[in-house]
Length: 289
Length: 259
Image (tube, rainbow over all chains, first blue to last red):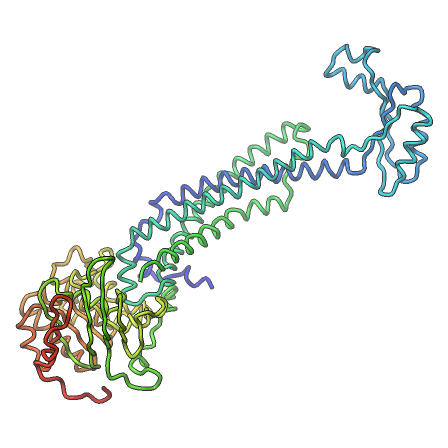
């Protein structure tokens, strides 16, 4: 299967010695570098989105407008509902304190309606409708809000960014493939005479293609490993920066699977480049007799 | 390890038999015409057969179509009309993937040598063997022997640009015959060598012919023709065969066994 990788020196000499002189390894290195950084961002976004989605999946809030007085019976009503756990009351005073960070002293104004909140987790099948009715019986303006509804737009944006990153990875891969096709055609033009002679003495297209395929595989492997190395350094620097930034980066981390995907990317790009080059060379050769 | 070349090992021992029968003609041209692009036909209505094991000279004035006819013979060109059979197989419209095995049965000496400049004389001569799937060990002996035969034993590692025209011609001839081809096609093979070397090269062609190789030599050199008894003439003028009986001006070889 991989016999063509280990060709005899005489066969290697057929295409001459200029292996790393061309731009192909450099182009592939730059593409790999960009692809790995974008892929890492996309995977980190995916990880963050998944973390956020998991944490809010079953989280609800009962908003109680001006409901400081009725907070205790409401908390009791929520706690007594089957399937509810992790009940946490956020009194109006705490809410105003929180808002003070953004609104300043205006957050304490009586003219600013600030609700009290009761956050809780509800297991699937919890009768939330009945809970809302009971809450309204105690505090008529009480309103049940699912966290996923309020954080939904943020999650949507995160997922959109994930797809943008994925799209960029695909586009850059196509661009890298196009560069490889151009390089393969250039190599064919450079060695057209040698190819004609080889065809003339009975070499098959596959025999000719193997020589180019091997050369481009080596160029692509060198380029993608160099690009991956540079990207790894940048990612390590970013990771240490993120650690220093602490909570600002929240759950934006790369898991083991993500790291495995990133580690495989240079090899996937090498395989893609080699396949594209092989196809381009074979197509070009078929135009000759 | 021989890697890429392994797929190309030739089936030479069976090469002269097609479906169990001996092929009496190496090539059959039937109403063959050739034009390049939209231009006028450079070859018209060619009808002839090359008998297995015969020696042919292809003559005619410059521009008569000799090189084009040779290109049809060594499968570098397809006819625009008519049919060509080589080694008993109709190849005018054969799939291009089917052609390499037939090309390996043909040795070609090009007018412009067509040596690969960055390969040594040794590697140039070894190329047909390697394409056929021979290993480095299998290549070594025959190539050294062939280089010695053409008087270039001490130039094995020299690259073509450092060789004289005559030396390049001899490397090209060595490459063409190293594989013991069934059909040897040579375009002005003695154009760049002195009389002595020309005689030696013709001696090589004649020797190969005696071993069963069909030889077609395009040349203007009347001396070569007259010095090769038994050779037959094919004369081209303006893309057509003229004086068809002229192809038998010299008496043919006595029939060979198996041909």
